[in-house]
Length: 239
Length: 291
Image 1: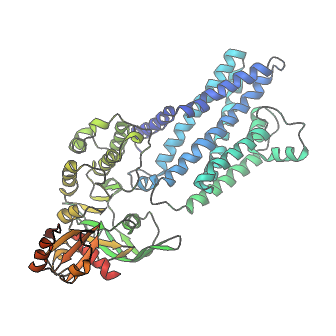
Image 2 (image 1 turned 45 degrees about the horizontal axis):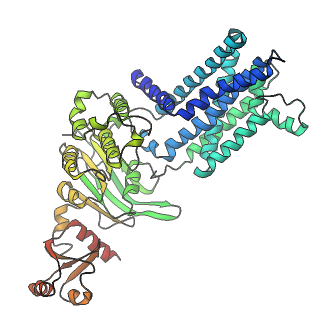
Image 3 (image 1 turned 180 degrees about the vertical axis):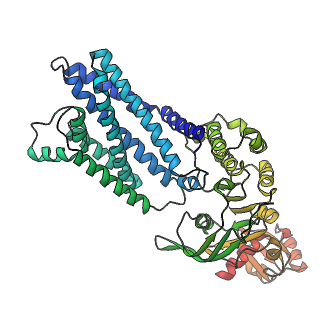
């Protein structure tokens, strides 16, 4: 694999992203804005709130990136017929996916770091101590939600894909301890909450008890489903 | 010349392709040999683009399919749809392709200039016209001097002045070319082999040369009279004076006419043209027989 070509391909993926203003807003500015608003409201009464909301925002960013960006874009490679050209280019087809994913991963990590820098300057939050845990948790959320985004995109038809993604996104967001703790929720809701990857990822980043097994099951199941979907996919002839 | 030790590039035997229970390709048999220039001709929905996808292995079809393809860097493709992100600029796409294929700017300069890409290099793909997109697509299919070129409707949207130069680009080098097209005139000029397809069926076995198609083997007349549909109210009078007639593209083609018919048309002030038979005529003649 030619390094220069690979790096240029990653650069183009990042460039494409920066040219989409709405994507930049929701991936960078929106989490920063949420952080400022939520922490301004709650951190006065609760000094630990910054340590609570930051993991929530990292998982939220992973969800947005995976469900609304990575999944649909890779699906588009197939549905637009672009894959037919990639097959006949002088590099392996995975080259394009890897460069795209790496571009998004870099972008995601920059967004995470920006949020950490902001929390340090506004609330003097101990960034260095938490950074390894936050990075591992954030990247794990990106991987799991990207797989979930891919499965939803490939499972759904063109018109229903966006709706289904929105439903999953809001369920995960409101049931998953992102902005507030659901300790007083109904037992059934609490049971469902424990099964969600958001809860386990957040628990890990918040130094609470978490289940690696639940995360592994999510990862393996989604990876297997995605592999099966790709295997059985028919490449359409026209856009 | 291309060093190709294989006797053929593509070989299809009794190949059929079904989509949603519709038979898109029916019992196709053909063999494309190295350095042949093929035109796959047919009307809309005849299965031309599907045939290209089956040849490339993008669609799984039944029957026997054999391929002896060159290395990937020696294949040039332009299918329906483009492989570019709408948000990238033309110059960014071109740079990526040059890096992917290790081709320097100097090497592809002539192709870049013939396709007049300098004027659109700063435009985003999504803001290009159909013809401009086509030119970028043609560049990515041709800039690396491929040994096998597969193009789907390469000239639609391209202005006639540029078409000649682009055809020269495609056909001047010894290489295998497959074009799915409506461009009957280009086919007549450049094709070694013509492949007619209609409703997924080939109209004759394998590809046939333009000379054979235009010989008396199919339509045994050299000339035709062309009349616009609607010019004559009672066509039965005209049909009784010719040996063969074809109707397509709002025109009536009359073959096997005599001077009496020409006098009759002149007497009745009916506008007509007298011209040589074309590939379209043979295609529609074969369809008529098929029907």
